[in-house]
Length: 130
Image 1 (cartoon, rainbow, N blue to C red):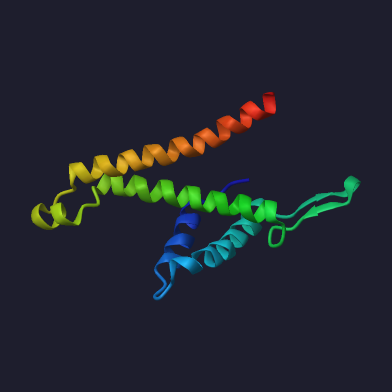
Image 2 (image 1 turned 30 degrees about the horizontal axis):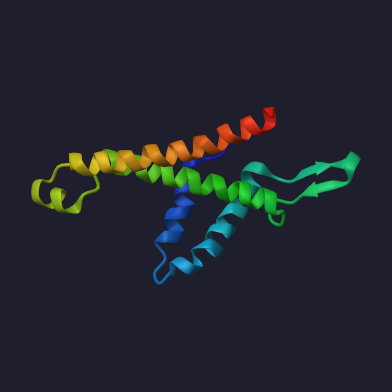
């Protein structure tokens, strides 16, 4: 399985750029995006011997797996960009340069987000070994 990082970022950016989109409706758009990603990257999973089928458009395990990937990828990519850019409108307007304070702020957010994702995987590994 190969998840296209650019595709995930583009999907979420397209959703977030929709005029009038309320945060309360964001989940619906993200689920539709996750289904598209699931179809193209995870695909249908079939276990003939157990008569089990996981459809990437209907199976909660597959759709939520893809949703997790989409959200994780977008979050890390956007925070990485904001770390590089400084993402501080006040400083940039005055100097035209990236803001070192804004860069550190977003770097801290990036590191916290990354660690939280890693912690989930570490916890899962520990549970499997127990």
